[in-house]
Amino acid sequence: MDASLAAAGRALGAGDPLAALKQVALRDDPPALALRGVAMAQLGDLPRARMLLRRAARAFGPGQPLERARCVTAGAEVALAARELGWPPAALTAALRTFMAHGERENAAHARLLQLRRLLLLGRVGEADEQLAALRFAEGPPRLAAVAALVAFEIALRRGRPGAAEVALAGARDAAARAAIPALRAEVEQAGLGLSLPAARLVAAGQARSITLAEVEALLASPDLVIDGCRRAVRRGEAAVRLAGRPALFELLAGLAEAWPGEAPRDRLIERAFGARRINGSHRARLRVAIGRLRSALRPLAGIRTTAGGFLLEPPEGRAVRLLAPPLESPGAALLALLADGEAWSTSALALALGTSQRTAQRTLAALREAGQARAAGRGRSRRWVAAPVAGFATCLLLPVAGDPG
Image 1 (tube, rainbow, N blue to C red):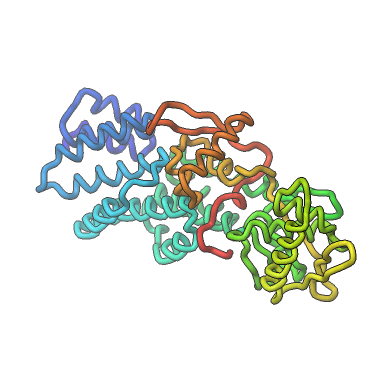
Image 2: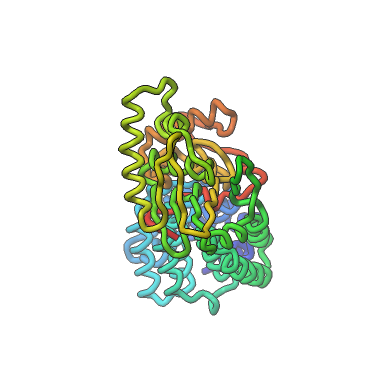
């Protein structure tokens, strides 16, 4: 590597893309193209970065697998920043194997972190947590240690563990300070805001008050019956029953919790669970069937008693019912939580992250656009959706968590 390429590489490692471009901006050889691509990515010009990295990867011949693996890894990072979650993960896995075969531990660690960050965006928190626990980044460069700590911080937030999140955040701050990269330090400080913002609302007697993630953790650890509207589950201590795939039953349960310690009138439950405006006999029959199914689902945790005017939720003796509601009441709350990171998302990436169809994501985005909460840029496949960061509360409990009861 000549002096210009070495200087550009050092500048990029220090988070100074302009200094790197001064060294390689006029060169078109493969290594310079790759460094220019990384520099453009750091400057936020992701389409240009993607194009340069692809040119560099094609220019490196079959006899240069290590150089091509570096381009693939940089391209994967650009795709992640652009929220293109459909990029083939097999290419990054192949690059990781190449790094391991050539003893490039730093690049291998970088590739692993990209895999973990993609898992988090897809809501696969448990899988990301397991893989992170098997890795060790403390002995590597402080830049990678900071990113690894941020991944651990995000996992702890998604799982509602503020204590673990604070430990990870402290590690990220220390590593970012040692790395001396201003952009990385700013990212760490921005991430830390989620610990102090309200994460949910506690509803009682028709009144709601905002609570932080630490208060949420204390509530879920209590012996009371907690109706968790953020994860659509009912919890008592370590026991939990998930109702995320049964929206009508959860709406009935939330209606019963709102009315507790009193009874919930039948008509109000029907209106809430089925959206009926003119209630008839068929709605009442549906309510009886749904209440029977809800009783069966709740049997390990609580009971439901039929009363003259409706139904009454019965927690274990001496225990209270607590209704935990999302910080934002919106049908598109989970989608808004994804857009709140300030990045531009494609419809396909949003659908992939939410585990839903593109058509469902499009309908939700259209509603949010009419409400002025989201806006689109571009046309066709290049269309991207953005939103201003959601102000005033943390979004961690609104983000999807695929197959993870925690």
